[in-house]
Amino acid sequence: MTALEICAVAALYYAFGRLGLLQQLVRGQVTPLWPPTGIAVAGLLLLGPRVWPGIALGAFLINISLGPSMPAVLAIMVGNTLAPLCSYALLRRAGFRTQINRFRDALALVFLGAFTGTLISATVGTGTLQLARALPGGFWQTWWIWWTGDAMGVLVVTPVLLLLLRSPCWPRDAPRSRWVEGSLLVVATIGVGFLENAPVPLIFLAFPLLIWAAFRFQRAGATPCALVVSTFAILAATRRTGPFTGHSLLTNMVALQAFNGAAALTALLLATAITERNETQEKIEQACHRLAGMVARIAPDTGAPPAFGDGGRGGEESQGGPGGQGRQEKNGGRSGPS
Image (cartoon, rainbow, N blue to C red; front, side):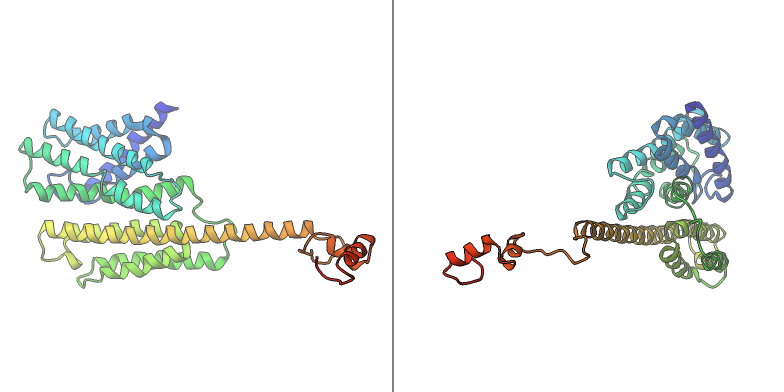
């Protein structure tokens, strides 16, 4: 079973790596969206660190055809393997849950899994190309694109995979109106994606959609919506259309990273905050139901509400029993509390 899991991770890494190379910007191997990093982090979170050979194998198969030399390929493979392992270790250290149903989980995925762990792959990969004299552009420009691609892979791919494999995407008893609203959200997201590539800079229209998806559908709507919006933004940046027209490559990559980071952060934080609020409200309702059941069980069979006083002593005194009469005589014939 472990061997099958390793092979599956390697195959997915290689397949999505080939897909990510379609939008390469530097030397045919540096792209602003690198889905394999997101797949690697998701595989480690779901299957454990035992699948790391699959990540290394997939990275080796991807880079062997890109070069520039075997030592450089091995060094890049090591960096691409250590980066998701570092992200996995940081997330586990922070108590990350794969359900992403807490506010702290979203913050950990963004700042530890995406922005921190991927620094290793970007630094090792860019440094290796620099030492091999195979870097056509500047160091920092290539480093920024490399880091942007790996970070975006974790930000937009990992949550979708965790959602598909660990959480139900849609409730079975969803009414028809919810299906209609979900269809409208899909159509609107694709429409805004095309507007992102229009000559007029309308990329900001994505944020109302992300808020809509987070409030109405929580993680099931926010994470796929963020993936689609980020993908269209990357297409606009690589083609230098819309808001990315007339700027240098480094400027476009900085703007793209800022937009995709803000979009993913908005979607994840809103979705997890609303999910956490709903779960808290559900726990409060369950506690109220349990309390009502306890009150119903301790109430008398006559149906009268339970009396919370000084025990059964007041009942004896009101009935004028011997104990009550003796206490009245002891108090000098006065009735009332002793």
